[in-house]
Amino acid sequence: MQAFSDQPVAAASPAGLHTTAHVASDSRAHHAPLYQDDNDRSRHLHNMARLAEEIAYPVQLIAPLYEQMLARLKVHATVHDFLPILVAKNVRHALKDSVKQH
Image (tube, rainbow, N blue to C red; front, side, top):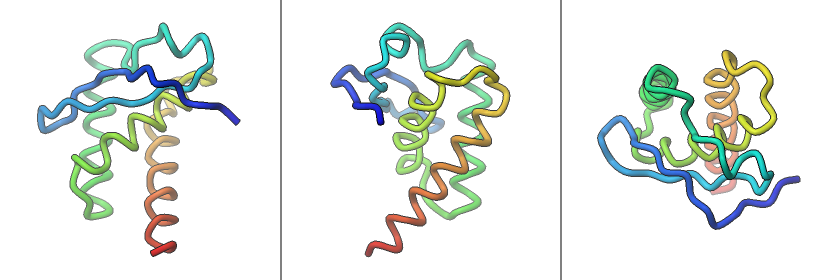
């Protein structure tokens, strides 16, 4: 299990809001940007918007959780093409679990 550091990774959400994701304390994570380039960023922002529409949650609520999951999974990913799918799946499960607890 990984601990999270107090070092946030900045990223912009689709609505232009500034969000942060705390990166796992793995040494590789401290130096890696959340998004590889503008295309990668656009792909993830689009995925956040689709996920928000699918589960009827505002993007502003999904973006921080999505970026946190992305940062966590990206550290150990060898194939980055599947990250949007895996991150969306994890966010869906996390939100379902939080609804079940209430």
